[in-house]
Image (cartoon, rainbow, N blue to C red; front, side):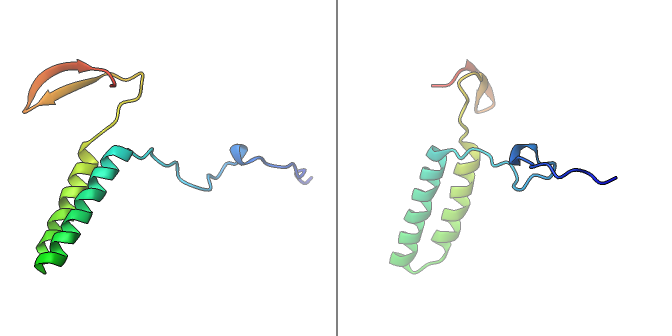
Length: 90
């Protein structure tokens, strides 16, 4: 006996078509983009490729270090390894 052909909605699919994407932190992406643009400008002006390499490294560090909190989350804030307290978003 064969299986009947029922329409399958995308949400009912057993095989996900795409991986779930993480939300993009626009503030850290903007700062990282500005750092890359600044380093590219310095590279053009000084003709030294070290600026763009350092800029990309700094942009990656900035993008990975700045995190945004959801409205229901509270986080522990550490500065220089010392506890500053629990903070909410804002």
